[in-house]
Length: 448
Image (cartoon, rainbow, N blue to C red):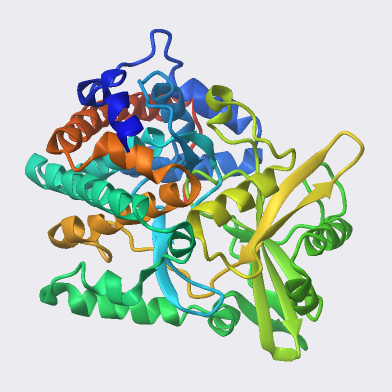
């Protein structure tokens, strides 16, 4: 902790609160266009359509844009496993292996080791942008950022003083989630918790499939859910999927491998998900065990290089699916029993890394805005963001050094709010450029 405190002489709180754009900052539209070259071309207009909805939606899809900016800011160099795309919509509830409902980070596509500030700065900036996008004022956005940072500091100090085995067994439970909400918000929370607990394979079966003759098949809803016989290279998908699942099965723990091999693949389809992920190869896989009453739905997601790698270096893992899975295990601590990785080999020179997890087994995220978290309870809920991020960072890094640097100083929280305000303005400018590129026809947007 003393070493962490000493770092303030090298990187002051004032330094942390100042946003400095790179001298030769790459234009955000060019970054999106470069990403599009590595993705499924027909899906890119859907990605842009989703990013067009608001400055916050744009921010959600712009992790690569902010990565270059974060690389230009001063950091303490205390390494943790970064989420890599930390924002207020990348948290939610999930079930542990014992089916306990817990709260935590739920997106790891960009995970990579790096200095802890990268995640915290992206998170607080997202809080200001989300608040403003939903009509919140400056006082509300400041309150939210302060609560995120104060909780991060408080929990990091707690974890710094905790035995390592105890820390490894820490989770944010349903009971602890309830304590963050006042009585007036309990009904909203109850409905959400009930809905999340009801998210299982039988519910997915009823929602995503229909009978075709005597067999169940995934329902086509183009362009968001579609069946394809060949991949982008014109290769038969069925044989590729079979080989990919064999590869995936070999990476599972022995007990889970035996469980998985009791299920037979019945159908699969491409399914467009999220904002930042749109354009990568994502599929839903439908299996049956002991008949139709024993369904299993898995989500296949392509794993590309992290958007942070140009600035933080390449992953130690050659397989990008393994990078994602290793990062998730470090940050989350209680991942889905079917979470693992593999590789789909197209030919000698071409392959696709991926990871697989259950589609919806007690998983749920609370959106910000209508139908989700209102501005009235955003500040209460935001404590959980700081808590979950601190837990992930403490699991994977030196909690004592981070706690020593941050302490429980209000000066630090003020600095984070200063950065968040400044970056929200940068995001607004970037969003404006993006909108102009759409209007001019440079970027094509889907009409859904």
